[in-house]
Length: 625
Image (cartoon, rainbow, N blue to C red):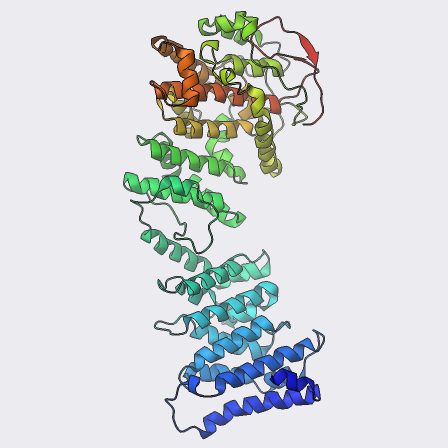
């Protein structure tokens, strides 16, 4: 009604007169009142402040953004905000702090002009910030709204951060008066005020998400935001019921809203149930982490703190299958983060010497001229003789339309078809069951493999990986594949006696490693022809050993094809063994698909990349899929 009436009169003069009249009504209360205990809600002060705010907003809308109206000039010249902040601190009349917070909050959020750079605005704002988050406060809701408005203003105009932080020079040192972040962390605690907690979290997100530059450096150097957040996370972690956390639910934890029940925090390991819950929480933290600076700290903490990395990797082979699976899930999440040190620390540093090669084989050619001996060893293996000699048992053909990066092939022996066939032929025909349900061969994995390889290429573009294999050290030394590959290979060797879900997680980690384009990873994980030094093993050699054990164990299972078929459909006896066989078959097809995607597609590629020697040659398209 006031604004409608003002529109019918001379706008500028009437607005200023009305603004001044409302302010004088506020100040007259303190001159005329005789009852100091009367609550502010029983006076007309709240209404007067609302009128003043409405006039300021209306005035700004009638002018260009760069112009300052007479009402705003009056507010600044007469230091109205300074007076209001003083009255709020005195709580005179009782409840005045609440009304002033509301006025400041709405002023900062509704006015389009950047006000926080003005001395008569940021000084009273600093005073109000120091009044927020005090013990026993009855205005937490209004305080949280006010601080959110301040943080939003900072996010819009980074230059005002220094004014809000109240950074002062004392004896040559830069000293910061407690800033908005400190009361905000205290607002995370009220158990019965969800709206306050939510607004505080939103404000902290605005502050912690400031883009890099002088403002972000000022925030980290001159405030205790990092320490406050870390301390609060430790408090929240201590409240987690680690002995009752559902690890499976945490592994599939989405990007939950801030109203979520739990807040992710660090990792502390005690009893088995606590280990399981804490590892699952850490896994969720890694998955949701997007800050490069925080990722640096996390990688340094997990992988470069001596006691932690061995402990985490040992738990990938824990007596508890659940802990093992959750720990493998953590490794897989780490392998998907854009940080070079992760692969260096977990795998590459152990492969750099290439001491897994047998003596005299360090300078292996890449044209396939020396691949015959290892290929012949595979063909002489009694477990694969039936497959190699029967052309009707060849695996399905390579898809004619597939051609994939990288343009220059990784180093290794054997043609693309030979390497693909080597993995496909690992699975003896007696235990192949996917074709019984017409589930397709390895070509069904090519599209996914192309996606994985592309993702890994994108992650590693800035890591300056070499294009060729490094020169071997030449020193005779016992080869150790590193704690991660050791635990993965040990687990793979027991794939026939492990739970189905654990095997899926295990092969997922190995496939992720194989998809990376580093020449050492390709040679060690995807080249079946590398001549291994004594006591060394590769992914291919471990698979051969597992297949040999499998062929011995299946002799005791009658009607094996039917049982395998039923296992793919439903539960059967010998379930763990049968499911292990199925996972092995699918894993070998997956590795074949990854090798196919990473290696160049040859012009004359076998139409059926099987294990026989008399294979027809067809021309394959080189179009990109």
